[in-house]
Structure formats: C-alpha cells, structure tokens
Image (cartoon, rainbow, N blue to C red; front, side):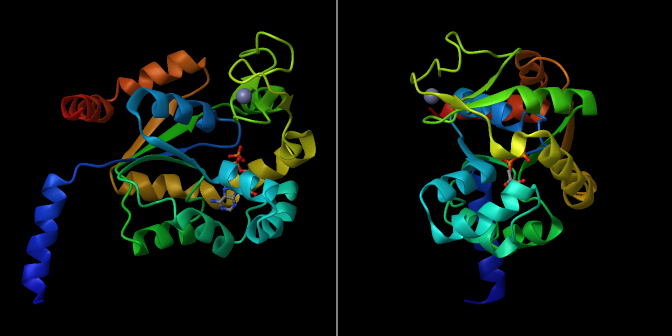
Length: 236
Ligand code: ADP
Ligand code: ZN
C-alpha cells in the first residue's frame, strides 16, 4: 500500500475510534489503586495495575512472577523485559486505567513502540507524611484485592473484607524499610515521567492529600474527564 493511503486510513480510523486510556501516576501510597478502582466502577474502564498483575503472577508461580519476586521484596523495579511481557497482552483494550506502568522512560518507549498512546495522565500529589501513614495502614483482601486502611477506610468487621468475606493482609513491601526503598526508586526512575507527559501537554496534577471522595471529585471535575464521560454515556 502506498504511504499516503496508509496515512489517510489511519487518520480516518483515529477520527471514529474513541478511546479512554488513562495513566495514573504518583509515589507509592499516593492512592493510585484506590482511585483507579473508582474510575473502573464509574466509567466502566478496565483497571490494569502492574503491581497487581505481578503479585498475581507470583501467586500463580508463573516463571516471570517468580523471577520478579525478589525485586519486589526489595522495593526496586523488576527488569523491564519481565513487566513488559506481562503487560503487553493486557493492553489491547480501547479503554483502560493504567496504574504502575510505565514506570521509567524505557517502558514509555516500549508502550509507544506498540503504538499505544495514553490520552491523559493523572498525577496524584501527596506529602511524605501522608505516604507513610497510608502505606503503613494499608490492608488488602487476599481474594478480591479490595484496598482498606486501618484508620481511614476500615472494614466493617476487623481484618475481614466487606466485599467477599475473606481475610485481609499486609503487603510484604509495605513494611517500613521497603517503603523507603520504594520512595527512592520512585524519585530516581519514575518522577522524570512527569516532565515527559507535561511536555506532551497531557498531564493533570491532582492534590491527593484528602479523602478518596474529595480526590475523586477533583478528577471528575477535569474538563477532559467530563467530556469523555458524556461521550461514554451517549454511546451506551
Ligand atoms: P507502589 O506503586 O505502591 O510501589 P505497586 O503495587 O505498583 O506499588 O508495585 C509494587 C512493586 O512491583 C514495585 O515496588 C516494583 O518492584 C514492582 N513493579 C510494579 N510495576 C512495575 C513496573 N512497571 N516496572 C517494574 N517494576 C514494577
Ligand atoms: Zn474481598
């Protein structure tokens, strides 16, 4: 096919194809998972969490997961080749919230090489005090993955999930020493993506120190989200 035709076809498809690919960013404990869950419920978009996908792979004794485990326990990034293999097969949806991936510039490049373009980035900004309190109080359901907090979002019954009745647990890497390492990794490798997406003009900074309803209200107040929400409604 000659190139001009290919280009025209592409333009044509982009016009009718409406996507909602959101990347949610922020340091560990910023509340990415909680907000992504709310977006998933509210907008019906799929939540793709690289951390959840990795933990799932570890639980299933998948060889990639077993290779990743030692890195995760230390609080450093797992090698790009592993995470990319695990994420690639999930990325062919039109609408999703990405949480935890990409996490360095090499992963951004990989995503772009696959021709996957993020439409908007939500950058959750929190103080260091909030981070430590959120992570140390975080508990997660062993079965359905719902996230709780001992003080701020406690389950109705102690250590039991409201959703499915299974036990809650604390992530191994949510213990104090690993938290420090994760924050360091974030500063050294992930923070620079903020400038990258800001230069592209798709970054939205969200003050995320408050409770989840207040944070979510800020997100749904964004012009970009409002527009997409009404388009999604019109389609369904
Ligand atoms: P948090 O954002 O709170 O640190 P995650 O659940 O997103 O927690 O990640 C947990 C761990 O999984 C990370 O510390 C890292 O080892 C690994 N991980 C998750 N996503 C990636 C990624 N995109 N690239 C490399 N490692 C990752
Ligand atoms: Zn549950």
